[in-house]
Image (cartoon, rainbow, N blue to C red):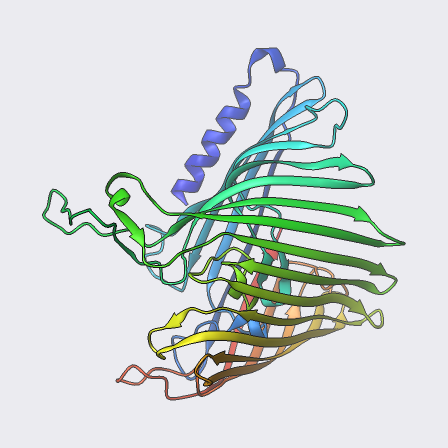
Length: 443
């Protein structure tokens, strides 16, 4: 808390010490954020999330997480506004001493609006940013996420729609990134005599283009294309190392149809991952790169539907297929293809002005085929019933929401076991019955 207070004080001091030339401008300071926190108990005292992306998050989260944002318009010159924004993140799993290492700078960038005379809505920005992340909320799944440090221009008017261009870069875990010495280089040691090894990450560049335009009544279409360019770390000692796999380039393509209607909205997304991102089609955010190439395809349908004034539901259907050829050292065979399907439904019924019953049911199956003909199947399911309190119980998105719930979760024997570990380190259960309380809020 002290770190956040100091940063907030510094931002306030910067705003209030604005140059005299612009002293007549009153900054628009804002505070925004997201949080969730709760307590949960099941067969294991140390309960944890169980394949949330695949079966849903309601009654399936026991961590504490927060994003706290501070922003302000700091200078306005005629009709051009310079703004700063910072966001600090905190995440922990009920750790007693959580104040030492659990605050991170999640966003830190400057935005300029109104600089282009012919298009005053356009924004130019530089810094670290959650860049236009797109998700399905009920399973906390970011299906389009190229966030990182970079630069771009947003909401540039082109024809009937808006164009967004960005270049971002971040360090990413590749698929088992292993660095080894290049030919002709000898092993080096640091000043303490410790063997110098390569890093365990790749620098990945994302060149992202999105264009959104109106289609027919209450409908919009967004077209997206991302060129993905991994870079090996060649700084300092690392110049002597290379990866044992070739992490190639990739192209990600997406088409989204957003349709509004009298009782809610619906969104359909089709994505293609061509190259080193192919296997991210199965549950990935379109950002991870792998040491092989292939093709991946994903279809997602999600929406918010009101049946009556008191009853409604949200849903997510996620179907994907990907190919590849990487060798699996544990199974001693090569990956061939993977098919996956997930279905999640969260209905709610309003009881009073500020209370409602909420349920969630989710299930998934994932089948992987290997080149030697063997198969691996994973599956899981979850059911949750909750009593919730919110400012407007008729509105699904109304927050803060306080929940008291009971959940049943089950995972397949081949993977995703959910019970407590035995002394040997293996899970001895495939199902769990949990109860708990959680709060979720955004502002």
